[in-house]
Length: 144
Image (cartoon, rainbow, N blue to C red; front, side):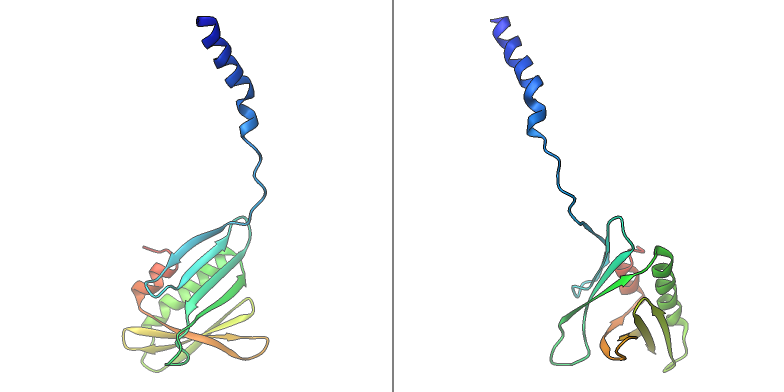
């Protein structure tokens, strides 16, 4: 009986590697941060590609999700975060902007919130805008 159990154990150990196949290289998006309104900031693992999906408040009757991709370094994304965070120190109704990759982020201070307009540098069109509090900004960039 011991020989049968030993044979089963040996057989299982010898051929168990066949159950493990190599997985294909699948692109994997890692969540950096998110907000309650379904806005999310992602990074493609192993690359400098970021994706910002944000609820677009450009039209009051239609708040759809807009997506932009930033081909930027971690340092440039950190600079964007710092720019947005420092925008809370602006005096009322002063507008400033920050360019990263193909996009310009224009900020207008409005009380305890900032209004961030995302514009295309290439076509000079407004893609959309979102409203952020400091808490929203920290959640979006994963700075808890």
